[in-house]
Length: 328
Image (cartoon, rainbow, N blue to C red; front, side, top):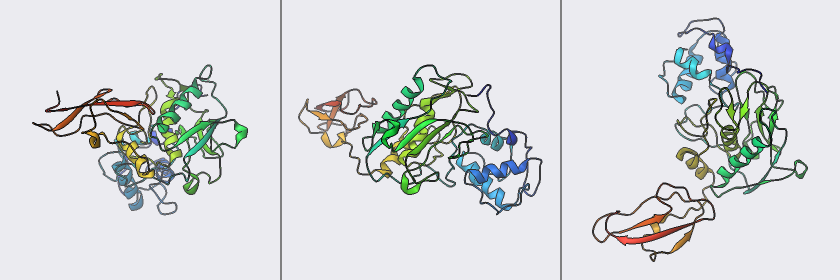
């Protein structure tokens, strides 16, 4: 539990703007950041100087975060580097979702370990369970809670910042890992979902200078299912997360990445049901209702319940009412 708000990567916050070929006080911290998060190869740069290798790494970082790719360390780059973020590396060059590997089975278990003292009662665990349910709603994986002694596939809990699994000191909020065939932390079970309980304050909901558990958990469980970081603004798998903020719904980019990992997931496509008998009910696996079909005289279109744009829950039904003519 943090006693006061901690600025992410404070050493970088004090580094002055640096151009190609220049040196500046503390610039090695910028290079250490670029190396830590996958942009700069160890031993391939001149420490403390913005050399050609570092400039290329800065361009890659700037493109990932939709900044002007100057290859220089400027104010906008400094601001992007000092945001709270996930401890796992980025994927330089990615333009949308990126994947590691899928699980080789579909039924996974998780256990709840050490809680945080920041939240009264079991609120953090309620938030964790909600994040698992959001990913489970995509209908390819199931997550069942078990006791810690039941050999879980995933173990969730709060740890000191210098977690021996993966150091989170300096500005990262949490870390997880990818499925066993492509882990970067460990290839053994249980896989970790660990939150930094030293440098950050945790909350349920948007609270000043605190981080919403469900928001961060949703991101970390995305790594557990096999997704890497995405540069897409608004995606759950974008690496940076603000305090006093919530993001509890998957974006189209997150869902596309999940479908890429688990293509066997079958989702009924209501466009194939245009000529279903009026009033027929279909069982929904995961369906985002929307109007489809062509308009015009004699064309089959339909109305549906729930209304277009709502997400249908697992095991619920969608009622289709077919008619001819344009959508009313």
